[in-house]
Image (cartoon, rainbow, N blue to C red; front, side):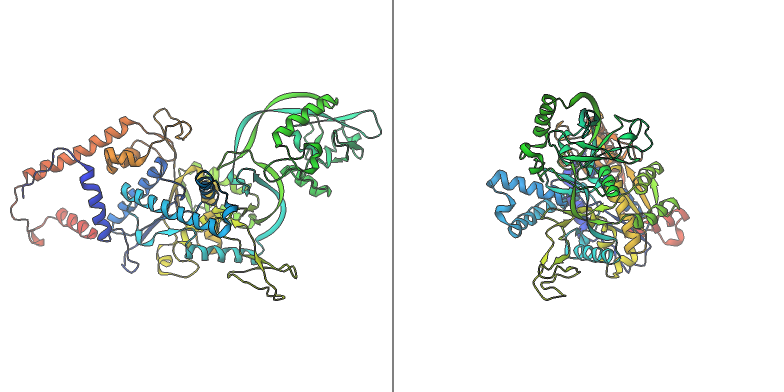
Length: 618
């Protein structure tokens, strides 16, 4: 039985061949009726926008460790793979490709032809992602691979939307939302990132009608003043309450607006007078509702000014700001300009500064859904590891606002609402309809699509056949562990928890294992702009998948970021080579000619135990 191996381990000669054998023999595909206890994980579905990065490699490595460990313990292990359609990100990518390669927009193609292009993109990049995961050695069950817009997942989305609508938890309303002027769509609160940016407070005089005096307001966005419909003061502010009920003249515009009393105004902050622009500020919107103020929207969808801005009509919001400030100063309305650093909301996808504005959108009422989800973590039914990340979860869920779920895109799950222009009837249906059930006239479907996270929230159970009561759902749901980064707690983790409890009546998982980011050797976040990103496939090609996985999995602690360096991957490669040489030494010196095992009666207890564990795996 002597056998001599090569002196150096060559992953290129072995890894692909071994992986192909594992898949061919069905080692990663559990049988529902195998009689073994279940252990399951659903993969956080990568977006079909490109290829995997080092964060994905870490995420999948940690999941694979858990799955392989449980598989070796004799569990019926399901690691369910799949990809996400990533509505905004994918549509932007395809539109950019269309513009650069053909000089066309999606409107030139029309909705149907454009979606054909996106499906082609999806097929290409989904295939690439799948091959990358296989190259990494991920022991997923590829026979059960899913996509957030496949037939089964789409059916689950329709089921959930209609069920929530029938319960009054989904509604269409005119409210203040986050709007991205570049992506030209609404965003949820979780899709807005806040960044510290230098700015200014512009202090402006608002003349009092019929008097020589004025009130002074301070604003960081003077271009929104065209939408002012009041100025508010705190009713308990002795220095300002004499102004309540007076009328002001809006500078430059000349429109009259009232001074109102509202305790939203902080007495000790700023000038004590706050301009109220209900159509362009979330807090002002609430004040406007309390006082029945007019909502004047002064910008177009691309953040250019509209007719309400008068002579500034058509100007970009920042160009308008510059010109308006110059005019305010020239006309004597500008008191002073004070530097002020503040948090500015930007689109999480493109980085464009978000514009809060009023719009007709679809929303989910969150409070009734959030309460049981909060309780599930409070009572220990669901645990965060490390536990400190439960604070992130509670902070988000305890302060959650209604979720804006409609997106002004073409790529995604179309909202299943149908409108009859003849009688005004709106019908929400699990199946497509062509005629109005009330009057029989033709109907048109809502043109918007659902937020990507609406379908991702259903991932643990939609992928297992829900709303049908499938054998997979019965055995493998709830899943056992969710492995994900801390940046998904608000986007995804929270939504999966309340969705599982609401629609299946069971938690989606028991443990949320949180890992950190993979940073470069200097501790910087990997990004295209810095040029410090590392392609996992290049590492695998040079050092092998085992070396990459070992480097990612060692020397880190749950929830903390890790630094990736050449030294670390080389040390992992060297360690793997030592294991290889240990095996080489054994095989070179093994002299047993007859490999037949002795009778069981002649085996020591520990040998019987070892053989029983080996047989469990086969």
